[in-house]
Length: 318
Ligand SMILES: NC(=O)c1ccc[n+]([C@@H]2O[C@H](COP(=O)([O-])OP(=O)(O)OC[C@H]3O[C@@H](n4cnc5c(N)ncnc54)[C@H](OP(=O)(O)O)[C@@H]3O)[C@@H](O)[C@H]2O)c1
Image (cartoon, rainbow, N blue to C red; front, side, top):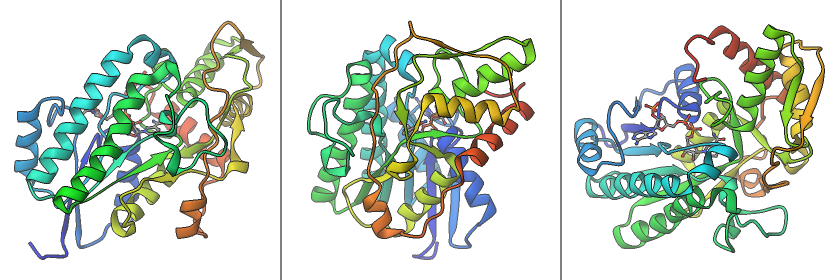
């Protein structure tokens, strides 16, 4: 293999983020890059022997590490211990075996929901370890935070180039649209699809006032590839739309209704928790590197996702 040739193993390659990266790679392939997208069927990454076998089989030079036990607010609240243990095992196996098998660079995936609950806004990359995370998802959050600790340690002690990105709320094709376990945007999409079909009111969980920065999986895919190819720091980088582009859950629900041309009644179920009111993140570091990056307009990205869900309803994760 030529020294410049990259063989890139994408763990969690069948998920929402992995499929976003795959769409971008297929649209714009490069001769010196070869991608392998893994699912849990290729290897159970909680198991060390299985992880080692898949690395030995593909012999990657680079890894994009996405595989994780992921869930929305309600899924996390029910199972913090499992979120902590499973994600800690996956991350320890992937990073240590990557180092042992000579992988040059690993880009892992953190999340803005792992930041301290009590903080000042906007949050930035320097604040990850500044205090306890929100109590609803402490298991997932502490497991993710330890990736940053491991990246520092591996780079210091083994000269690797391990780093991490921090996306805000991702949505797009191939998401988990399950109403109990999924995130807010796929949940809204699934609900409106059903409301349209059954001619029932659209019931949004919570008050609709909580605010979030959403990123379309295809935009995240383009940014992930830039990090893999160009970004040299160990410290993570937040991948997000600007602070001004943060929207309320109510606005997100309205975009989804538009995406389906749904004109029925909206109701808000105030007995359901809103989760953290907001977690506004700064994309100043990203903008310093990529001042001209264009995000897909939110209305278009949501409409494309609604269209994908309608076309793939029989096979989507619901
Ligand atoms: N979704 C978001 O809003 C968001 C926001 C910030 C950060 N992130 C991060 O982005 C990454 C990808 O998330 P996603 O939303 O794409 O998740 P996802 O759609 O649920 O996909 C998870 C992926 O991980 C794989 N996986 C799960 N457990 C595994 C195991 N034990 N062994 C091997 N593979 C396993 C799944 O394989 P199967 O398909 O075979 O099940 C799937 O490919 C995660 O690290 C997550 O923390 C996500």
